[in-house]
Length: 63
Image (cartoon, rainbow, N blue to C red; front, top):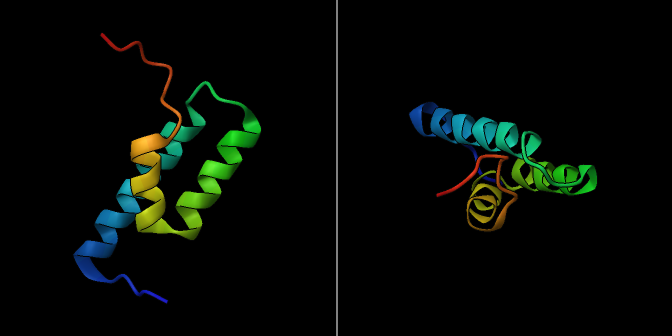
């Protein structure tokens, strides 16, 4: 198991919190939100990267 400490751990925590808030604010189904949140919580770094690339987007309109 990986151990995150110090400044790097704080950055990972902040990014994961941002991801979870974005997932909750997305327009996807509740089941999909739960799966994405579990992925980010169980695999903090890999889950965040996968969510960043393929995760549900927030309700913002893109140009």
